[in-house]
Length: 181
Image (cartoon, rainbow, N blue to C red; front, side):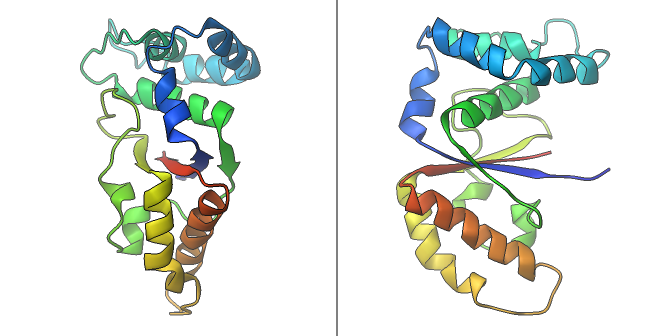
């Protein structure tokens, strides 16, 4: 199985304002634009959802209404719903080399922040982390040297890519949200 990291530069204030907003036009827009993602998620998790666990559509609706009905083990659907919101509201930053930020062996808040919304964290995947725009700027200064180091180990390209993620978000004055699955 191959893992991937999806990264988004996003205005965290705008993202967090969605929670409980009752914004039905946003909900309809995402459901229309991401229709294939809902179908794919329904097929993928068809036999894995325990009774009471929300579908992706239900998780997104619950976030928008601010009325979560989490069941044990359902954090993953809220994570995928948060990713759809980030895709809709933010800028997706392509990644190729970076998958697990923990493998970079750096002290980043991205590893400990959890989801950017008040949703239950996933038990395993997707792994979610976020940085505010201020934290992005701080971490860019702290880690920008990683983009210049050619250590020759297997993680050199991933370190460069991490610095590029920070730089992209910093240039746009946005936060950074990542999902690994």
